[in-house]
Length: 288
Image (cartoon, rainbow, N blue to C red):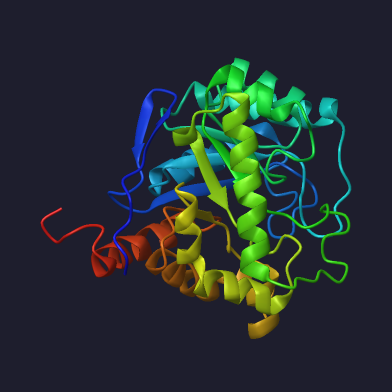
């Protein structure tokens, strides 16, 4: 495998050395309709306890999402998103010292949560849905995950098509990086995500994982989010809660091909797998 560049990201009071080992972003959905765990953590107390459990299991970053971005999902208002987010964010900030990311594409939501103490934004639109998002991220100088999406969640799986899958995703991400840097976002605060499952055909998701190393040319750390997604379920004919083994296979090839961060539901199991994968790909050694 091609030797990875060194990436260190300041995230609140934490420095994430993304080259030293694979980092795990734990998914905390506080929505009634997410595809895998919708409704399980709607109550703030339940969500906070799940966040604490992920910390015990070895998570590096908690990513809180208050609006489902599953295929066909309808948007929610800023007010509703913040109503769901703030009690959970405030509760976790009092009890954990790891970075907390917020999964949102709305600039006003991002500004409120960054003022509250969140230390990363995960924008599924790659700064495209809300023109103010780039300015908010530049103002607070926090890490930003820039993802590729074709269409919007409500319509992204309605016959998506690519003439050049990897080339088109690469160009989209490159344009978003350029926009971010031009606005004043530090390049070393940018993380890229090719957007597995977001406006992709079944075969596209496998192609992205097989050719993930090509995105190293963008010069940013790479995040992938294959966890429990339908491309696994369709091949194995399994419901979301039965897709762990498929997720682990996708995580394995993703790390082998250059992923720095994996965004997952099953933190404990993925953490154990990553320890072995990192040894095999040379990120860590037995002495570590």
